[in-house]
Structure formats: C-alpha cells, structure tokens
Image (cartoon, rainbow, N blue to C red; front, side, top):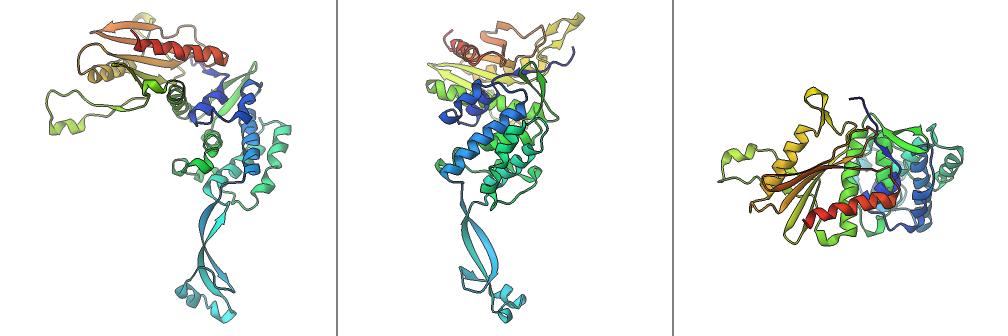
Length: 349
C-alpha cells in the first residue's frame, strides 16, 4: 500500500481546541480564510495573537539577576565582590529579582517569529507584519529554537493566551512542513507523525471536554483485571488511553490514530484493520469491563487519509462493541463536528 497523506483544512480549529483557546474571539475568522501554505497560517496566528498580547502587555516574571553596580540593590554577594575586586572600582556585585519580559515564554515567541520571517513559505505581507512585532521584543533574548523546553512552560490565568501561541510555536519548531495542494494543507514532516498524533489526541479530548462536560471525558489508565494481586504484575505494561467518555454507566474508549497507513494488507492483499491496534483496543475494553456486562465499548478513530479503502468496522466481540472509523479532517468544520457528535451515540447503545 502506497503512502497516503492526511489532508487537513481545519488546522487552526484543531489547534484552538487542543491548546484551549477556542474562546479567542479575535482570531475566530482565521479558520475561514484560505492559506496556500500551512506556515502562512501559523504566521497569521502569531501576527494576530502576539499583536493582541503586546496591547495587553507581554508576560513578565521576576527573573534573578547578578550584576556589578555602583549602588546597593537586593543582596550583596560579598564573595564575588571580593574575588572580582569590584570594591576597588567603587562597585558591588548584587543579586536581585527584576520584573522583566525576558521570560522563556517570550523567548520562544521571538525565536519562532524569526524562524518564520526566514521561511520561504510565509508571504511577504505576513513577514512584514512579523517584523513589526520584533521591536516590542527587543528586551527579550533570542534563543536557539531547538533549545526550548516546551514541557516546562507553566500557564495560569494571566498568561493563558500563550497556550495557543506556544502550541503553534512548538509545532513549527518540531518540523511541521507543508506542501501545497489545491488550497488544502498536506502535513508531512520528519517528526510530523509524533507531533500531529499528539495534536490529534489533544484536539479530541478538548472537544468533548468543552462540548460534552457531562461525559466526564479524560485519558485515564486502564488497570489490568487480575484474578489476584501478584508481584509479577509490576512488569505488565501500562494501558494508557487517548480518550475515555463515560455516561450513565456506559464507557467508550477511543484510541486516536494518526497514520499515513490506516489499514494493513492482510492475506491475499485484502485490506484489514491493523491487528496490533485491534488487539490493543480489545485488551483495554476487556480489562475495563470488570462487570462483564458489555457496558464498555472501544473505537479506533483514524484520521482519514486520501486512500480509497478506509477503516469501517463495527462488530461485537464477546459482548463488547468494537469498531474502527475515520475522522475526515478535510471537510468543512460543521461536518467534522457532526462526525464527532455521531460518536456520542456509542454511549447510548
């Protein structure tokens, strides 16, 4: 089976949900615009988002500083003052905290803005708009994008808008490279499988969390349904779910799959659901259904590719409903949402 690319026209909407920024009304119309290149879309998000943040005020934090100065400020570092012979020059080495915008959050923004300005797929107009943002970031250190530790960023009420902006920056730095195809965005990259898979999972979780809070959506770990506790059970692998929906005693475990190959070649070349995926979801369901009453179902939800044959499975195995479907992310958003809403019906059967 040849490689097939997952085509996405709802990139912004996915990111807005995944990074909990769906209430950013100022950026809503981005989702309806046409972009020939994905980096052009990402640049526009940063132009608007960072511009809005500059008007509100850039994120600031107390940063530790150690400087040789003529007046006492904060705490005097006596040892360094003596070793540097600062007192001879009428100076002291002082340590203090400065409330500055040179935070890791802003360093990441500035570094990625520079990357986009140099990127060939970003239009001239947006490059100019990005350049106009740089003077407001003069006090921010330019760092190497590959040195940014994305998992260390903390978010709170004051800097919540940075969640989407830095999510966009992370995707850019991780190597999200687009190709042009009749106005849509094909996502291919040297790390796109990992980056887009995480985005896909987060998008699904946040969608149901926002629109169906009554379903208690989350991504818990399924415990092994052991006959009796054993020390040897410590070597059992963890069963980490992508998304679990619960309602009125029923449970649906969704395993999100972002693959260029959504089917495998079976015997005689017949396309079948990936056996490892099917065994995995079946294992999750059987161990979760401790009452053995069929109240737990499992669904493999693949991002749809442009290949002709697509997963379409809906069977009952030993009392539990197991299925495999696709989510066509290249449809208009209202149709994508209809597909997502249709899955809620699995909790009603």
